[in-house]
Length: 297
Image 1 (cartoon, one colour):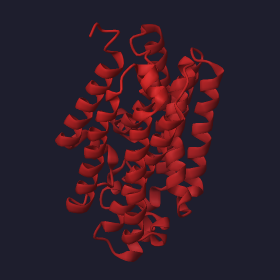
Image 2 (tube, helix red, strand yellow):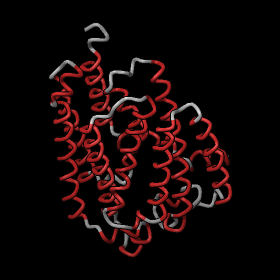
Image 3 (cartoon, helix red, strand yellow):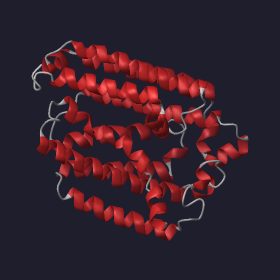
Image 4 (cartoon, rainbow, N blue to C red):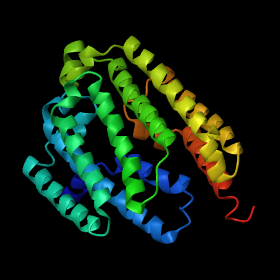
């Protein structure tokens, strides 16, 4: 029972965010290279353990505010089912496992992973209470996932891919703030849950989200239509996958504004059937268009 609570503390459901590690290998025409793919999987696992360490320290730092949250109060630390000492021991075990994995990866990846840990710990203990910087630090974490996956297998990352990552991660982070603000909670209780929320408003987050959503769609479209992309993949048809990206953004906005969701981006991505189907079709379309010459089409 205790082990299950420790696993819950590590938030394995959030590991889906680390799939950004595979962006570089997919768009570098190397995903069929089994050796590189295995290395990329190791990088993904290392990021999963590292992110779990961050979540443990985050829950320790937020233990009091989580106790007054209608959902977070059931977390292992906030509910008292796991003690702080036990959480720290578990974080240490995850650290050892991460180090062992890193022995099989190059020094560039290790630097990126260490940077990821540092910026997330800074976020946990300081920056998450600073308006705007909080969402930009979250965005930086996604950029490091993309860069980490690329450095692990020594492939370049398109600048347009990084720009798209910046905008979509800002979109998700701002959507989360918007959802937290829209919850039916007393103002004083809301500030206890997350101090920075009193510096945001629903109108302000909606304005920022409009920019982030537009930036995501435009940067992705420009990436697929760029001369370098067309030359690399030998096709001009990747631009049509922008339709799936646009639908995904619009669907996410619908869930935020009409269903009052968005506080947990992972929950939306893993439970909303239209988004799941759309993501699968987008992935298959990208794979077919990028790798059609390799698979005999």
